[in-house]
Image (cartoon, chains in turn orange, cyan):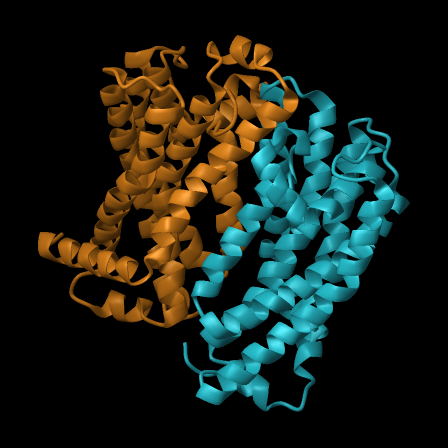
Length: 268
Length: 250
């Protein structure tokens, strides 16, 4: 993998994104929106008693804002990397990328880097708002939360490769992508504590890295309980860091080979 | 046109299944948020009733409004303008997919409400939806015009409109949850009265914004005015775009 090719892919994405500046604003607004909906539900339900029992804090706006930020950061690679294949298929340039001396993996790594950079800005602004207005404490826990987010980005990129494989195989996948995104949001406990789920759903929820990232971010900033414990949760995330990229790469390679052998990558 | 839209949609069965799956996921998301605050089944009922209108709104904004941008993206918009079809009728025909999809969505949401033991008044609810539908069809045409004029920016505006409506029209929570300043914005949006009236008649609750008769009157007026407004906006946008020759420009 050539670093200059990766950097070139990063630059292309950055340039493209600066052409459509409204999308940056839209994503920042979307993060606030994702947090506002459950906050208003909380106001509508008219009490924090049960919420406090379940989570160990009464600061539900802060809790929801952190969930929304974690979701936006974790959702970005799935959308940007997964959807990249669809976009290239639609504009008819996917085959040309496969014919270039640097294959799609360099492009995907560049997009991954761009996504990380973009996520830091998009989630950073709502997070700062949370520290200013929603009584989130700017303490040492923030560093641990950042570690959870940054390390968590690696397994999520692996997961994005699996989604990319799905898109390469099925092509018209708009609704599948939308459903996957929201399903991950639900399973990671964006708006709730995963312990609220029935056992079967909870088991699925523990099998995705986002659950551990989300819980880790919330617990370290808000000083509430982790799923297992701070270092145990981080260890689980490190295991995901090894397993998910490998699994993603394997699934992607097998699918890519099969698509190339059958119909080729030029079909829309 | 409607048959063509349905045919295209039917060619992607996995997408259709996923759209159905989305309903359950949304129900799960909002249900779990209500459960976090001990809102119970009443809260989930409110969210499910809102989900129905939210699906209607998404269909009108994306299915009707954004479909014009999609035609342009595919490069078929100009050819579409060269065919001897009434353009407004063909824009409205894009609701064809909604006719296929909405009964499914309604059955899923109302079925979930029944299964949870809520006593619901389906026929009265459908009556309110019959007033909301032309209103949203008109809104879809307004956005079709906006997408024709502003190209990709239309997508952003649709996003903001959809998010804005979810918050200000209180799709998933009672209006009482909104702060007073935001409630004034809600009162200025006719769809809020639709949501309030629909929830009131479907779940047998008292309307929060106005009396039911007043809300029905507003809905009735908007059901007539919005399609006219949509037609007007679309015609203006169409004339402007044709004058600058921007139909084929992506």
